[in-house]
Length: 83
Image (tube, rainbow, N blue to C red; front, side, top):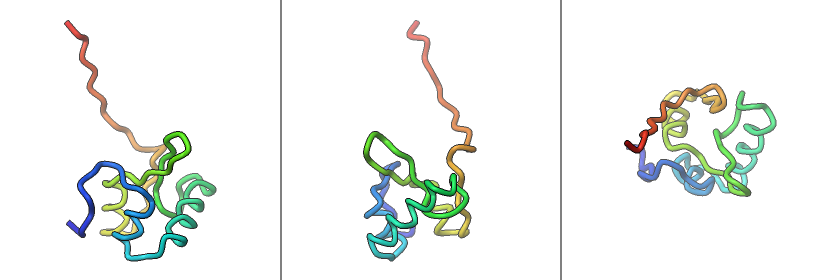
C-alpha cells in the first residue's frame, strides 16, 4: 500500500520517500509536529535521540491528510501474567 515499508516504525527519511518530499522538509515537518504538540506536521515519536514515524499514522496522513496526535491515541497492550 502506497509503497510504505512494512516496519511498524519508519525513519524520517523513509517517511519522506513515501510522501515524495525531501529529507529537509520531512525533518522540518517533524519539528513542527513536536513544537505544535501534534496539531500539524509529520507525526513522530522520540525514542532516545531518534525520531520515528508510526506506519499507521503515516498511512492516515497520506490517505486523508489528517495529522494524528499520537499523545491522544489509545493503544491496547496485552500483558501476560506469566502463569
